[in-house]
Image (cartoon, rainbow, N blue to C red):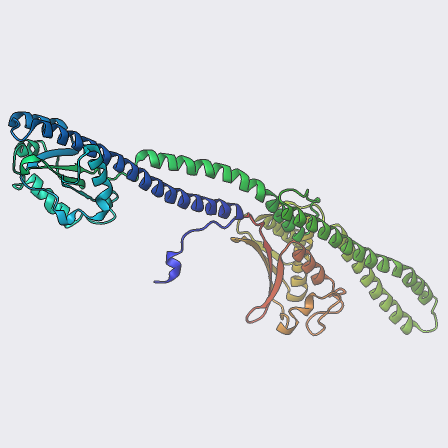
Length: 488
């Protein structure tokens, strides 16, 4: 098995990751705090109950001492029965139930407590055994306690009052404390306290923890959303800028780091737009200024009468220069004004292009595959598709258009039946004023700006365009337009 099968699901967005991290940290802290608090609480409660057993044992010893060695058996049984409860029981036996070798140094605190209550000297023997580790069931019960418990609840309990105490003995429970106190006449007062079963995960504790997690989750959700909202706005603005839109400047808000990032984005966006606008205006100005000398040269060429052949060559060159100038102006205009972005069905645009070119007598077909809607500049995208379809008809005889919606992008394909383009020229063919004379007609090929404008439009929308030669002949042009990121 690979490690990826055991990978825990983890949210992808920043807000969800922050909230999940906070919840994990708070839950771990709550569990650890609760376990520590419960352990301390159970220990304090156990100590208090043991002190109560000490007090009850001291009262019994003092009462039995006053009755003397010739005490009435029925009275003694009544006293022991009165001192016995659900978890505490006492009985009198000729032997000590707690072996002397098991009363270790750790039990001296309880021995001292019982001795202080009795006010006796050191001649009275007090043996106490405490099973602290059974309070939380972290370790198994000592074997001695098991044997002692079976002895107390089996045939081993003998002596005055033993039968009565055993008759009302509680079922088998974890023994938290066992004691033996010597009485007059060689008898021993034996007792045991059955520790209650641990309830570490009570329903109230779980409800309190769940309410705490819910409260922290709600507060964390509000705080994290407030902190990450500027980041979501910044991501949306960056995505719009990459698609050719002009988003309004963002208002810096949130933590200082996010404010500085937002301000830097606004500055970058302003500088980028200014640079593109300046370049486009310069290109348009140069192309516009070329019109005057070209017109002057055309007028002068018209006055040439003695050399008709050279006159026609000069006019042809001037015509070509004018086409280049007009194409450059159109290119600059498209750069400056691409239109307003809106939700557009790319499949419907392809259908419109196929119908318009078909009405012009061109062999253009479109195969619909359902709607494919995205936010774009419909005029610019339509021009790009039209350029590709016209090129396919001019150089391949026909154009076949398709558009389909993918998981993260829209794919538009244009196929023809022409000779194709050498793979070495798949990139250079998109450069401005590039014409492939070996496969493209000079007269019908324009000035080499069609594919450059098309790729410019596609990349302005965050997409790309690629070429692929078909077998045995033909060319496929694929345009990929990414869908907006939903910010998951």
